[in-house]
Image (cartoon, rainbow, N blue to C red):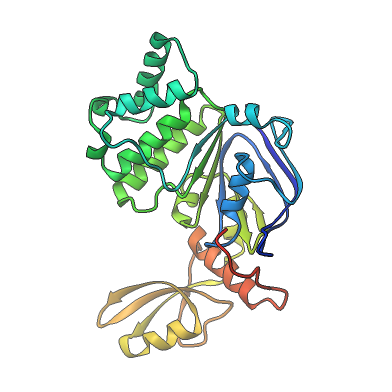
Length: 305
Protein backbone atom coordinates (compact mmCIF):
# COMPACT_ATOMS: atom_id res chain seq x y z
CA UNK A 1 0.00 0.00 0.00
CA UNK A 2 1.44 3.37 -1.03
CA UNK A 3 1.93 6.50 1.02
CA UNK A 4 3.00 10.00 0.02
CA UNK A 5 4.31 12.42 2.65
CA UNK A 6 4.95 16.08 1.85
CA UNK A 7 6.58 18.43 4.34
CA UNK A 8 7.50 22.10 3.95
CA UNK A 9 7.36 21.93 0.15
CA UNK A 10 8.24 25.14 -1.67
CA UNK A 11 8.99 25.89 -5.28
CA UNK A 12 10.08 29.13 -6.88
CA UNK A 13 10.58 29.32 -10.64
CA UNK A 14 13.53 31.16 -12.17
CA UNK A 15 11.08 33.89 -13.18
CA UNK A 16 10.60 34.63 -9.49
CA UNK A 17 7.09 33.18 -9.30
CA UNK A 18 6.51 31.31 -6.03
CA UNK A 19 4.31 28.39 -7.13
CA UNK A 20 4.23 26.42 -3.86
CA UNK A 21 4.44 27.78 -0.32
CA UNK A 22 5.11 25.50 2.67
CA UNK A 23 2.86 22.64 1.53
CA UNK A 24 2.29 19.83 4.06
CA UNK A 25 0.14 16.83 3.07
CA UNK A 26 -0.28 13.14 3.86
CA UNK A 27 -1.77 11.10 1.00
CA UNK A 28 -2.79 7.48 1.67
CA UNK A 29 -4.84 4.73 0.04
CA UNK A 30 -8.03 5.81 -1.73
CA UNK A 31 -8.80 8.79 -3.92
CA UNK A 32 -7.24 12.04 -2.73
CA UNK A 33 -8.60 15.11 -4.50
CA UNK A 34 -6.28 18.01 -5.24
CA UNK A 35 -8.58 20.90 -5.99
CA UNK A 36 -7.96 24.50 -6.96
CA UNK A 37 -8.27 27.07 -9.73
CA UNK A 38 -5.85 27.25 -12.62
CA UNK A 39 -2.58 28.70 -11.34
CA UNK A 40 -3.01 27.38 -7.80
CA UNK A 41 0.12 25.21 -7.94
CA UNK A 42 -1.41 21.79 -8.66
CA UNK A 43 0.68 21.03 -11.74
CA UNK A 44 3.90 22.11 -10.03
CA UNK A 45 3.20 19.74 -7.14
CA UNK A 46 2.48 16.87 -9.52
CA UNK A 47 5.66 17.47 -11.51
CA UNK A 48 7.67 17.35 -8.28
CA UNK A 49 5.94 14.16 -7.14
CA UNK A 50 6.65 12.31 -10.39
CA UNK A 51 10.29 13.52 -10.24
CA UNK A 52 10.17 15.80 -13.30
CA UNK A 53 10.88 18.88 -11.21
CA UNK A 54 13.14 19.45 -8.21
CA UNK A 55 11.61 21.42 -5.34
CA UNK A 56 13.26 24.61 -4.15
CA UNK A 57 12.86 23.47 -0.56
CA UNK A 58 11.09 20.80 1.49
CA UNK A 59 10.80 17.03 1.56
CA UNK A 60 8.66 14.59 -0.42
CA UNK A 61 8.64 10.85 0.37
CA UNK A 62 6.98 8.02 -1.52
CA UNK A 63 6.68 4.87 0.61
CA UNK A 64 9.42 6.29 2.81
CA UNK A 65 11.77 6.98 -0.11
CA UNK A 66 12.88 10.59 -0.52
CA UNK A 67 12.37 11.65 -4.14
CA UNK A 68 15.75 13.33 -4.48
CA UNK A 69 17.71 10.12 -3.97
CA UNK A 70 15.41 7.44 -5.40
CA UNK A 71 14.06 8.78 -8.68
CA UNK A 72 14.21 5.47 -10.56
CA UNK A 73 12.49 3.45 -7.85
CA UNK A 74 9.81 6.10 -7.33
CA UNK A 75 9.05 6.23 -11.05
CA UNK A 76 8.47 2.48 -10.99
CA UNK A 77 5.98 2.91 -8.14
CA UNK A 78 3.96 5.68 -9.78
CA UNK A 79 1.61 5.56 -12.77
CA UNK A 80 1.01 8.98 -14.33
CA UNK A 81 -1.79 10.16 -16.60
CA UNK A 82 -1.16 13.74 -17.79
CA UNK A 83 -3.93 16.06 -18.89
CA UNK A 84 -2.63 15.98 -22.46
CA UNK A 85 -2.41 12.26 -23.15
CA UNK A 86 -1.53 11.17 -26.69
CA UNK A 87 -1.17 7.83 -28.44
CA UNK A 88 0.20 6.56 -31.73
CA UNK A 89 -2.97 6.96 -33.73
CA UNK A 90 -2.41 4.07 -36.17
CA UNK A 91 -1.58 1.49 -33.52
CA UNK A 92 -4.34 -0.79 -32.30
CA UNK A 93 -5.27 -0.40 -28.64
CA UNK A 94 -3.45 -3.57 -27.57
CA UNK A 95 -0.44 -2.69 -29.75
CA UNK A 96 -0.07 0.67 -28.02
CA UNK A 97 -0.15 -0.93 -24.58
CA UNK A 98 2.27 -3.65 -25.69
CA UNK A 99 4.65 -0.93 -26.93
CA UNK A 100 4.47 0.90 -23.59
CA UNK A 101 5.04 -2.37 -21.72
CA UNK A 102 8.15 -3.05 -23.79
CA UNK A 103 9.46 0.44 -23.00
CA UNK A 104 9.04 -0.45 -19.33
CA UNK A 105 11.04 -3.65 -19.85
CA UNK A 106 8.09 -5.91 -19.01
CA UNK A 107 8.67 -9.38 -20.37
CA UNK A 108 8.70 -12.05 -21.61
CA UNK A 109 6.19 -11.69 -24.45
CA UNK A 110 3.66 -14.10 -22.91
CA UNK A 111 3.63 -12.21 -19.61
CA UNK A 112 3.41 -8.90 -21.43
CA UNK A 113 0.45 -10.05 -23.54
CA UNK A 114 -1.38 -11.37 -20.45
CA UNK A 115 -0.81 -8.08 -18.63
CA UNK A 116 -2.07 -6.04 -21.59
CA UNK A 117 -5.25 -8.10 -21.77
CA UNK A 118 -5.79 -7.73 -18.03
CA UNK A 119 -5.52 -3.92 -18.01
CA UNK A 120 -7.79 -3.72 -21.07
CA UNK A 121 -10.39 -5.67 -19.11
CA UNK A 122 -9.83 -3.50 -16.03
CA UNK A 123 -10.67 -0.29 -17.91
CA UNK A 124 -13.48 -1.73 -20.04
CA UNK A 125 -11.63 -1.65 -23.36
CA UNK A 126 -11.17 -5.37 -24.02
CA UNK A 127 -13.82 -5.39 -26.76
CA UNK A 128 -11.99 -2.48 -28.41
CA UNK A 129 -8.53 -4.10 -28.23
CA UNK A 130 -8.24 -4.27 -32.05
CA UNK A 131 -9.53 -0.75 -32.65
CA UNK A 132 -6.97 1.82 -33.74
CA UNK A 133 -6.38 4.68 -31.32
CA UNK A 134 -7.61 7.21 -33.89
CA UNK A 135 -11.04 5.52 -33.76
CA UNK A 136 -11.46 5.81 -29.97
CA UNK A 137 -13.79 8.36 -28.40
CA UNK A 138 -12.42 10.94 -25.99
CA UNK A 139 -13.55 8.93 -22.99
CA UNK A 140 -12.07 5.72 -24.36
CA UNK A 141 -8.74 7.46 -24.89
CA UNK A 142 -8.76 8.58 -21.26
CA UNK A 143 -9.47 4.99 -20.21
CA UNK A 144 -6.58 3.87 -22.42
CA UNK A 145 -4.49 6.43 -20.54
CA UNK A 146 -5.45 4.78 -17.26
CA UNK A 147 -4.61 1.38 -18.76
CA UNK A 148 -1.06 2.46 -19.56
CA UNK A 149 -0.62 3.77 -15.99
CA UNK A 150 -1.61 0.33 -14.65
CA UNK A 151 1.13 -1.53 -16.54
CA UNK A 152 3.56 -2.73 -13.90
CA UNK A 153 0.87 -2.55 -11.18
CA UNK A 154 2.00 0.71 -9.51
CA UNK A 155 0.86 1.46 -5.96
CA UNK A 156 0.28 5.13 -6.74
CA UNK A 157 -1.65 6.71 -9.62
CA UNK A 158 -1.31 10.43 -10.34
CA UNK A 159 -4.08 11.71 -12.61
CA UNK A 160 -4.18 15.28 -13.89
CA UNK A 161 -7.50 16.84 -15.03
CA UNK A 162 -8.88 13.53 -16.32
CA UNK A 163 -12.40 14.55 -17.38
CA UNK A 164 -11.73 17.81 -19.24
CA UNK A 165 -13.56 17.66 -22.56
CA UNK A 166 -15.54 14.50 -21.78
CA UNK A 167 -19.30 14.31 -22.19
CA UNK A 168 -21.38 13.63 -19.02
CA UNK A 169 -21.74 9.90 -19.70
CA UNK A 170 -18.02 9.36 -20.21
CA UNK A 171 -17.25 11.52 -17.16
CA UNK A 172 -19.43 9.30 -14.97
CA UNK A 173 -17.86 6.16 -16.45
CA UNK A 174 -14.38 7.49 -15.75
CA UNK A 175 -15.25 8.36 -12.13
CA UNK A 176 -16.62 4.86 -11.61
CA UNK A 177 -13.40 3.41 -12.99
CA UNK A 178 -11.35 5.41 -10.48
CA UNK A 179 -13.60 4.25 -7.65
CA UNK A 180 -13.08 0.62 -8.69
CA UNK A 181 -9.30 1.10 -8.70
CA UNK A 182 -9.38 2.76 -5.27
CA UNK A 183 -10.92 -0.38 -3.80
CA UNK A 184 -7.65 -2.18 -4.60
CA UNK A 185 -5.83 -0.17 -1.90
CA UNK A 186 -4.09 2.05 -4.45
CA UNK A 187 -3.25 5.68 -3.81
CA UNK A 188 -4.97 7.83 -6.44
CA UNK A 189 -4.07 11.51 -6.53
CA UNK A 190 -6.72 13.23 -8.63
CA UNK A 191 -5.85 16.80 -9.60
CA UNK A 192 -8.70 18.87 -11.02
CA UNK A 193 -10.50 22.19 -11.03
CA UNK A 194 -13.84 20.44 -11.70
CA UNK A 195 -15.60 20.16 -8.35
CA UNK A 196 -17.92 17.39 -9.56
CA UNK A 197 -14.96 15.04 -10.06
CA UNK A 198 -14.05 15.50 -6.40
CA UNK A 199 -17.50 15.36 -4.80
CA UNK A 200 -18.43 12.00 -6.32
CA UNK A 201 -15.17 10.11 -5.76
CA UNK A 202 -12.88 11.48 -3.04
CA UNK A 203 -12.80 10.73 0.67
CA UNK A 204 -10.17 13.40 1.34
CA UNK A 205 -9.34 16.65 -0.43
CA UNK A 206 -6.78 19.41 -0.34
CA UNK A 207 -7.60 22.82 -1.74
CA UNK A 208 -4.66 24.79 -3.10
CA UNK A 209 -4.91 28.55 -3.17
CA UNK A 210 -2.02 30.61 -4.59
CA UNK A 211 0.44 27.84 -3.79
CA UNK A 212 -0.74 27.28 -0.22
CA UNK A 213 -2.92 24.56 1.28
CA UNK A 214 -6.08 26.48 2.11
CA UNK A 215 -8.04 23.39 3.21
CA UNK A 216 -7.08 19.78 4.00
CA UNK A 217 -9.69 17.28 5.15
CA UNK A 218 -12.83 15.30 4.26
CA UNK A 219 -15.14 16.93 1.68
CA UNK A 220 -18.00 16.96 4.17
CA UNK A 221 -15.97 19.23 6.49
CA UNK A 222 -15.65 21.80 3.73
CA UNK A 223 -19.33 21.44 2.87
CA UNK A 224 -20.30 22.04 6.50
CA UNK A 225 -18.70 25.50 6.33
CA UNK A 226 -21.30 26.58 3.78
CA UNK A 227 -24.26 25.47 5.88
CA UNK A 228 -26.49 28.48 6.55
CA UNK A 229 -24.77 30.35 3.69
CA UNK A 230 -26.44 28.62 0.72
CA UNK A 231 -29.73 30.06 -0.54
CA UNK A 232 -32.42 29.46 -3.11
CA UNK A 233 -34.63 32.27 -4.31
CA UNK A 234 -36.71 33.33 -7.31
CA UNK A 235 -36.00 36.63 -9.05
CA UNK A 236 -37.50 38.50 -11.98
CA UNK A 237 -35.57 38.46 -15.23
CA UNK A 238 -34.90 42.21 -14.96
CA UNK A 239 -33.25 41.72 -11.54
CA UNK A 240 -30.97 38.82 -12.43
CA UNK A 241 -27.92 40.89 -13.44
CA UNK A 242 -28.10 42.83 -10.20
CA UNK A 243 -28.25 39.62 -8.16
CA UNK A 244 -25.22 38.26 -10.02
CA UNK A 245 -23.28 41.46 -9.32
CA UNK A 246 -23.94 41.30 -5.57
CA UNK A 247 -23.79 37.56 -4.81
CA UNK A 248 -21.92 34.41 -5.82
CA UNK A 249 -24.51 32.71 -8.02
CA UNK A 250 -24.14 28.94 -8.43
CA UNK A 251 -26.98 28.28 -10.89
CA UNK A 252 -29.96 29.92 -12.58
CA UNK A 253 -32.97 27.98 -13.87
CA UNK A 254 -35.83 29.65 -15.83
CA UNK A 255 -39.04 29.55 -13.79
CA UNK A 256 -42.41 31.24 -14.45
CA UNK A 257 -41.01 34.19 -16.38
CA UNK A 258 -38.16 34.66 -13.93
CA UNK A 259 -35.31 32.56 -12.61
CA UNK A 260 -34.80 30.20 -9.71
CA UNK A 261 -31.39 31.15 -8.37
CA UNK A 262 -29.02 29.21 -6.13
CA UNK A 263 -26.30 31.31 -4.49
CA UNK A 264 -23.90 31.47 -1.57
CA UNK A 265 -23.69 34.46 0.76
CA UNK A 266 -23.47 35.22 4.45
CA UNK A 267 -26.96 36.73 4.16
CA UNK A 268 -29.46 37.52 1.43
CA UNK A 269 -31.06 40.98 1.59
CA UNK A 270 -32.91 41.14 -1.74
CA UNK A 271 -36.20 39.50 -0.84
CA UNK A 272 -37.36 36.15 0.50
CA UNK A 273 -34.96 33.22 0.22
CA UNK A 274 -34.80 29.65 1.47
CA UNK A 275 -31.67 28.29 3.16
CA UNK A 276 -30.76 24.97 1.51
CA UNK A 277 -28.32 22.19 2.29
CA UNK A 278 -25.01 22.97 0.52
CA UNK A 279 -23.16 20.63 -1.78
CA UNK A 280 -19.40 20.64 -2.39
CA UNK A 281 -19.67 23.06 -5.31
CA UNK A 282 -21.53 25.55 -3.09
CA UNK A 283 -18.89 25.12 -0.40
CA UNK A 284 -16.01 25.56 -2.84
CA UNK A 285 -17.43 28.78 -4.31
CA UNK A 286 -18.20 30.13 -0.84
CA UNK A 287 -14.71 29.24 0.40
CA UNK A 288 -12.99 30.89 -2.57
CA UNK A 289 -15.21 33.97 -2.29
CA UNK A 290 -14.44 34.29 1.43
CA UNK A 291 -10.73 33.94 0.70
CA UNK A 292 -10.94 36.63 -1.97
CA UNK A 293 -12.51 39.00 0.53
CA UNK A 294 -9.99 38.23 3.28
CA UNK A 295 -7.51 41.08 3.94
CA UNK A 296 -4.77 38.42 4.22
CA UNK A 297 -5.38 37.16 0.70
CA UNK A 298 -2.56 38.00 -1.66
CA UNK A 299 -1.54 37.19 -5.19
CA UNK A 300 1.06 34.65 -6.15
CA UNK A 301 1.71 36.53 -9.35
CA UNK A 302 1.26 35.25 -12.85
CA UNK A 303 2.76 32.12 -14.28
CA UNK A 304 1.94 28.88 -15.99
CA UNK A 305 2.23 26.52 -13.05
